[in-house]
Image 1: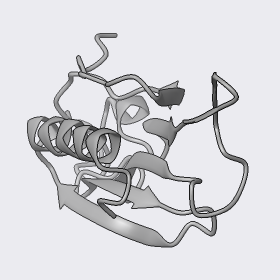
Image 2: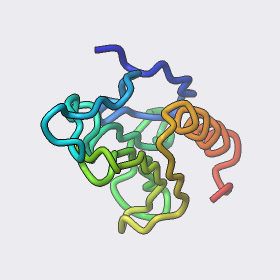
Image 3: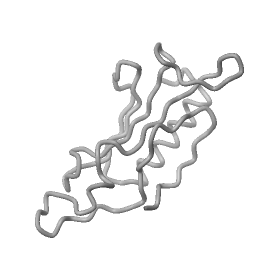
Amino acid sequence: MNLMELRIPQGYAIGYNKFCDVEPKLDTEDSTFLANWHYFTEDLLQIYKMGLKNGKWLIPEKGKERIVIDLGWYPDSSAEGEYILVIVNENWNVLKEKRTKDKYEIKETLEDWLEKLYSNPKWL
């Protein structure tokens, strides 16, 4: 398994990462399903924006500072699916969204969003 290489600035915590540099492969028996489905699920990547409190990096538990970046493949394991990248707040309200089948477009968008959030916390 080769994880997608990502440039992540300081101030972020990775909750989990299964975003791999692989292409979808159709199942030979069911063309609506992916043979390598385990790389194309709803839970691929989750990143938390951290904040400094008393000189320590912490993940805010609540409030407007709680920002989560989430990536998944929807519908899960489907050949008709696509990546959906979102930035959400503490109530899981979508603040930004990107949909595409192109993993490199997701990588580029993700890195752009991380840099913008890092350099301008009020960007959203």
